[in-house]
Length: 312
Length: 191
Image (cartoon, rainbow over all chains, first blue to last red; front, side, top):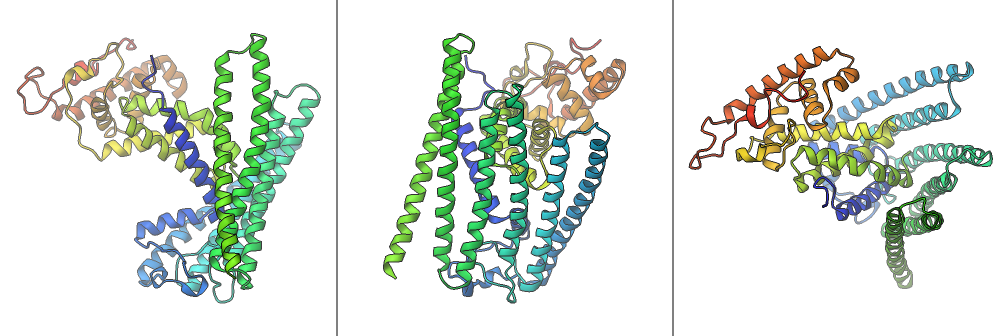
């Protein structure tokens, strides 16, 4: 009899899919953008898209009423203050962790993650500073699209991408070190089976994250140089994201395939329940479906880009 | 930075326990349980990349889910329930229907947080007074005293919504006898 408190598998799958999408959108749009959009919703300042490119910033995007602008600024200033406090706190924690490491009571991994939090906190604070500067300079909500206009000649979009890039590069460095530690454990026979493959997958994903940001900077630069239109800029980003997703899912397919082979061998030896392999096969099938979807997205965007290119 | 692979791993590890935690507290109301679980995860992917991963992601998710539940039920009037819906087989309050869950949570949401958490630990999570005493750094006797006071307060909160004529079919609203149905006056865990 099924457990009444077990989730519906369709819900579990759908939510996983939704969360993956939200996470990608979040990294694409900027760490702080999400929360500031939420703040804007509260203030009733809904934005509409920049359909016509840099010159077509809608009047509805302007924070026309001073009290609303003040509200948004006040919110960001409070968030910025909190972010600076987090930087301070993580810095103190890091100092303690370094002392502990020197005394031989703290591990390298612990220190590594403390440093990650400092970098993230510093990036958050910098991100908010940039958002505040943009609001003050433009009188509107910060814009995060690659086709957003400059503000008094200043490119806030690229500046924020570079802030995210610092975090992404630091994260890549950390996961590479984690992979190296896993490799060392595997070499001396104390690592869990599959851990190294899992770590390699995480590293690949971190590398792709850096590539995505580099691509954003390239596209932004091409847009500002008037080499491509706003729509084309967005399409190029979508194409790049879909392509990276195909690459990542393919890596995951290889990882799952090895895991499945290992499980089937264990089932044959009678050490693992067949149910475990059935669950793994489901994950493989889900991954295949995601690959097909990412490929379809990539093809649709490419066709649109080709269509636009042929018109020119 | 929370990567998709890490998110997938965490999601696989914590979603079912999170759902079960919520579902038990909403009497198996799937729609509500799914909404709360979804909201808790969305908050996680909003917070974790910015503030860093919590040391105990599951505890974080459960705490957020609990707050969402409390917030949800705080805004609602208690639903009328058939007394039989809260006839529990053992001494635990484990609402079997969404309506009875709503009633219990409505009451819990109006208690002080520590009292509500204590009742939850005892009734929903099935912890003994000894386990709670260990976790909270209290003596068993102190836990028993707090449980008694929390039960009395919950009963008081629910009393205005309870009719004495528990079996009157023609009553305008279904009724409930909380002390009996919720076993508020005692349980097997009471020393």
